[in-house]
Amino acid sequence: LGLENFDATGKWRVTYGKQPIDPSGVMKSGEVFAGPAELRRILLNKRELFAKNFSRKMLSYALGRSIRFKDSPTIAHLQQTLLETDFNSTRFILELVSSYPFRYKKSDTQDVPRKPKKS
Image (cartoon, rainbow, N blue to C red; front, side, top):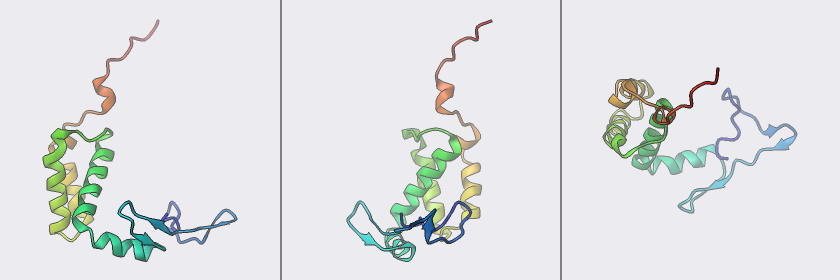
């Protein structure tokens, strides 16, 4: 909602098809925003929480599985990297791909035994 004005390539738009875009929304905390600028202001006031959630989501996406308790140290390290580097994306990605869970990853489906193929 707050970023709905951006299409899949990052281009700004004011309509989706023929419908006008309403970029307003309400955070779970109750804070209201009317568009990307106000959403940015809210997120900047919650840097640590944003860094933690961003780290969790990116690690989950990179691993192709849900986050597990044993991923906690990696998430903490990625969060700290974001905060110490002022959210430098290059440094973050380098830390993510060099992390133990990424280098030795297993997807959720690797834990499930597969049925043998019928001949």
